[in-house]
Image 1 (cartoon, rainbow, N blue to C red):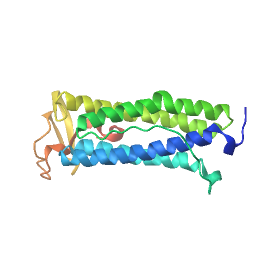
Image 2 (cartoon, one colour):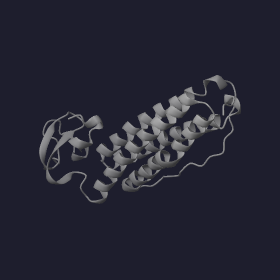
Image 3 (cartoon, rainbow, N blue to C red):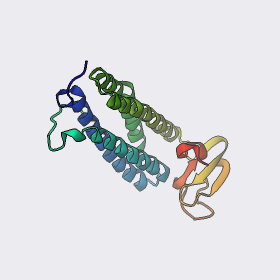
Length: 199
């Protein structure tokens, strides 16, 4: 069934997605700020890295609305309040929200877009849903490390990289202070958690 874009449910779903991605970006910036205060710079960077990707998702959804320039789209939608003062809880909330976008929201929006004849929009929803799964996995892994007290220690020897200078240390624990740039342990990340697996 093909419908006019301005009369479609897809139009409203795009605005919901744009609003949701915009809010997620801000929540992650706020979470990054708290992580920085707690000297958990590696988590700060994970939140900022993801926030930048959420901004790009918002732009993709917003660009699909271009033909409606000058119009106002009224939507009903619900968005989470995750204003915890605990980094572990913020990570778990982020994981939950990313999985919800992947498991339910964007797959449904993609199906609606496809049924209404908007294949390009449907593809955007389906592809971004997969990215949200990756985000959820990353937040979940970091949350587990925080909960287990293993953000900077390991049961086996692994590689750790200082996010400030790139120094790589191999051991069962990240150095308390980077021997190269003198930044604290909070800047060290496990090599296998680097974005894109780059070491």
